Length: 482
Ligand SMILES: Cc1cc2nc3c(=O)[nH]c(=O)nc-3n(C[C@H](O)[C@H](O)[C@H](O)COP(=O)(O)OP(=O)(O)OC[C@H]3O[C@@H](n4cnc5c(N)ncnc54)[C@H](O)[C@@H]3O)c2cc1C
Image 1: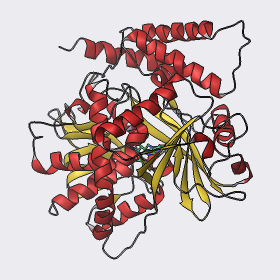
Image 2 (image 1 turned 120 degrees about the horizontal axis):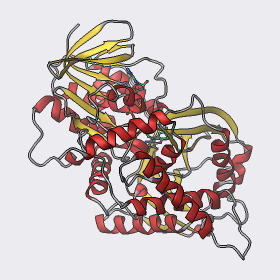
Image 3 (image 1 turned 90 degrees about the vertical axis):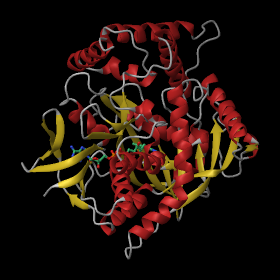
């Protein structure tokens, strides 16, 4: 079998790129490789909030890459309603109903730090600037929540146009659309890329077979790191796993939330959210702990605050709910936390990954971008997502000292959320100073001064010597580049 396009990975991104490309050019032979069980898939585990403004933080407007990410989220928000219709049409006779929810209530918990207050302010400012409707909500009068005494939210706002889809339904709909469009599926794993004269010419499967291809798209989620490591040193930045745990529960006491309820995005990508899945079932997510090498299962100490945070900050009645299912997925996170989209510096190789916390939402916009590259040839003169080119040097949105400060803020946020109380004679500064020092030691270990996001510094602090050496080698190679 020879393909025009081989897409490696069958999550939301791989399938969305396959469907959009097939819709644009029916003559292309498109193959998607990935096992049916989708091991480690972030898409399967996702709460699939379709949030754009609710994701805004005080840092969204600060850097061109952050602004491009916001533009990507806005484009996706515009595309979603039509995207679901196009999937249904492409699936032809196999109707896959997709449950979707409209409305997002963003609540700021009593234990938040200044970072959360800044995010709430930034959401309001961005919504006003772009004419996005929102309502301020009295945090003491949120009928759908019953936080524990002392943990009631201190601020809330409602975004009527933002909501969620059921991720598992959307994946089924993508599967049906791909099959309706004649996309070939190979239930296998790609173990390596095949190259000739420095260009990628196909993939090698775990079965031993080779699949020749005109173009290869890596949409392998957090597992992309293993294939990136096979490229010449310094070609594409390392990829980490943002492990996330969530659970589905059935209401026993009180009512399920009628729309998405979530906290704003907090430093280090922390936050809680509840998504209604119908008939009293709620999706409660999600933890976020980033590793270079993800463990097979989540750490109990990380899961514990997810549950206690819910009950305390959102709704104590949820403590009576019946647990139906756990999800554990690996978010694809790059060293600089921005996505890898478009052409790699290796001919005929493309990337659609590194989407971290909001890749489900961005999927239709990323699919549009990739399908354009795969079917129309060169990117247009003004490519709004050129900043996410896979061969870039890591994007730095702050100084190393700012990064150390953010690491300290993340540590304090986590400590305060988990109930840290200091006697009045102590301030938190000694703890912050120790965290800053730890962050600077991590950067020093890497050998190149680089400003990394706090959760990435956390991963560096837990990495073994081999990983540190590998990242240090990558950084010194790209630092030597003009
Ligand atoms: C708990 C949790 C909650 C989340 N909530 C949201 C949310 O509310 N909104 C949002 O927008 N995003 C959310 N995300 C993030 C979002 O899920 C991801 O950004 C997005 O789904 C990534 O999609 P993907 O297709 O790139 O990766 P994946 O879904 O991980 O898919 C990659 C696929 O490739 C397969 N694969 C890997 N290696 C190979 C190989 N070598 N050969 C063949 N196949 C391979 C894997 O098995 C997998 O099926 C959440 C993530 C998690 C974990």
